[in-house]
Amino acid sequence: MSSISVPSINLANHFLIAMPNMADPYFARTLTYVCEHNERGALGIVVNRPIDMTLQALFERLSLSMRDRALADAPIYFGGPVQTDRGFVLHLPAGEWQATLKVAGPREAMIGLTTSKDILEAVGRGEGPAKMLVSLGYAGWSAGQIEHELSQNAWLTVEAKDAILFDLPADERLPAAMELLGLDYARLADQAGHA
Image 1 (cartoon, helix red, strand yellow):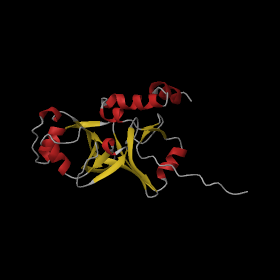
Image 2 (cartoon, rainbow, N blue to C red):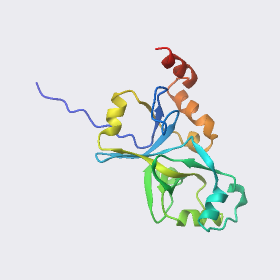
Image 3 (cartoon, rainbow, N blue to C red):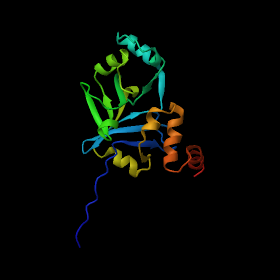
Image 4 (cartoon, rainbow, N blue to C red):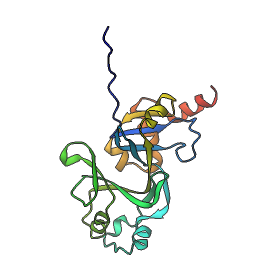
């Protein structure tokens, strides 16, 4: 009898949906977009937790000018508990920036995660990517940690959809991701509370 090797999962370009029983306050009721997942671990951005800061305020803090006033009130997000003093820009298309992780998708519709200031300078000039979400901090998992958490039923996973990331208000993203699985988050939370 030969042993069958189980392929390792790659959750890049997937949503992690925190289960209602998630006790970790950083991740309770969160939707996280996984940007990278490999044998060394995983990196993601929480995409449904706006903080009390706008893009205009971030630009002022970084001494950047913003000519495109349409984006001034865009919210900044809590991206996760790691490096919360550092900005991460999730955007479409990926484009060509100094420090960009190209996540997934065809070249013209590839999502990028950029940490270099040049993307914000371009946004200030009105030359930034078509769609973006800016966070402070990110979520990180060591090798095997995310797989362990999945085995403990801490998360549900589903392939990400750009429209949920970039076109919906923050408070609609988690329920919309649940709908991709045919589930209702409110009903799931209610059932988990009465298990």
